[in-house]
Length: 274
Image (cartoon, rainbow, N blue to C red; front, side, top):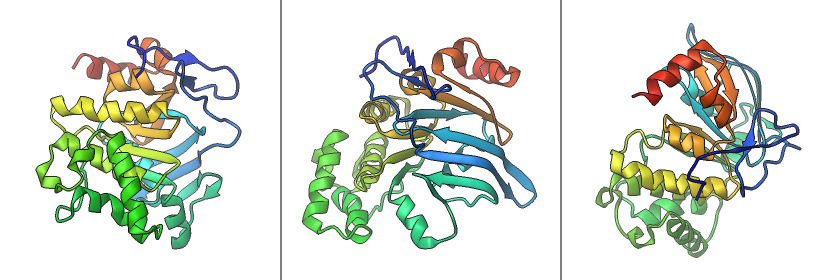
């Protein structure tokens, strides 16, 4: 678990915008996990993402926040090609995303994603939900897929739910299943799109606890969330977006205590006093 104070410790060197937690694995800045260069995206005439430049180190934990409609979810969806950008470059593990479907599938195998909605197949058991992609995409034998599935169900603390169906689980349990399902593909990067926004307040902590454990294991993570306690405790860097742009970014201590931009100050005043 993280320190109760939620304080992060600044790391000198190339990761100038980031920060490492005490006792956490050090982010590897030698080769970015994700590199976004001059990226733009439009929906028709609506310019949803404008000149996005972002480098994410191996093992770095980034929280992306901002008002509704700021483009933050679209940004992370572009990273595994669920949305297509029209200008600029996105490189994942040094490989540029193109329209090559085989390449997209290969990159998606390295990038797990957890959504607001759980997206579990209601007619399949929890175990079957977790085994589906490893068997069909990675061609794993069913026995091996089941072993891996149970390993990750244990990691998210619900192995006893393996033979149940999604409808028999609480929302928090279903979201933990969704995280375990993504982990079964052994991704190197995890993307979270407001994973607690559809949960009742009492279920949020159990999901955040799983994410904190994942962060402390050294996984590269990008998380769109308004859970500022989680951001303080886990993030190496917080990115604030508004109107399709990255307005400000920095380590949690600086971001919360001394934001530079007026738009950031207004957002924090609203969300922290809510």
